[in-house]
Length: 220
Image 1 (tube, rainbow, N blue to C red):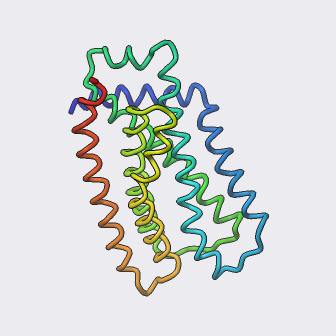
Image 2 (cartoon, rainbow, N blue to C red):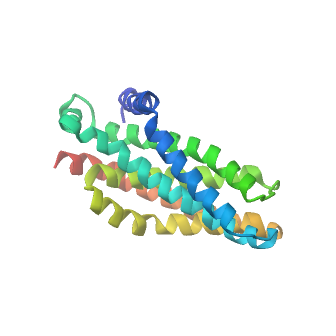
């Protein structure tokens, strides 16, 4: 694993997003539009809000993540830029890792803005176990980035959407369940760690598999 090459790809991806800006803005506007539409469409009590908010957080994460991963590869297809990247003197695993880290950072920054705004618009008050909620989101977003970036690198747009949802289902279920326990069952907080362990195991397994396969798949 060449750290310098990985960091070079990561900086390239982040610089492109900073330079273009409309990509991140498009993702943010889409997420905020979803939140605003739902917040003004329903009159929801605090008890019901605690039940639906975990699922809604991860639904927003899914759709913003799908756009983030797909757009991170779409601009590489112009003028065969991705082919040029593959023939450059750089490890193919470094390309994958650099894009994964960049997508994770972009997705994390998006959620830092979107989730608090979701709480504000839904008038949802949550003050307990924020650090554990933060850990759950970090682990979930990283696993999502691992799988999403890998599929975006090896498949076309249609196949990407078909494969992504089944592959990330275990991670999303564990993320939604752990978040639900944090919001609803504060006296059963230790049950969150069981789901969190499952998410960590998912991240480790798919990171190992994707990192091992990416050289062969991109080479083909």
